Amino acid sequence: SLGNKIGESEEAKRRAASLPLLLLHGK
Image (cartoon, rainbow, N blue to C red; front, top):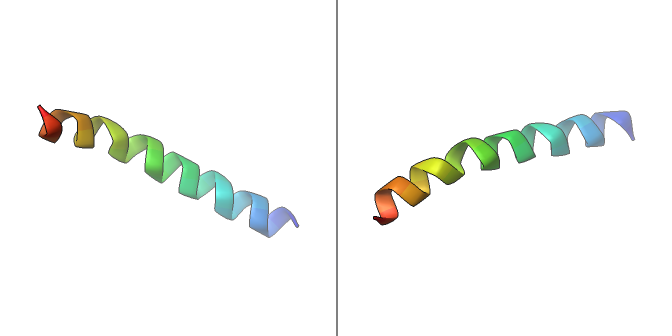
C-alpha cells in the first residue's frame, strides 16, 4: 500500500542517515 511504501522510505532515510555516524564511531 502507499502508506507502507512511505513508511519504508522513511525507514530507509533514517538508516542511511545513521550509517555515517556508525562509521565515524567505528573508527
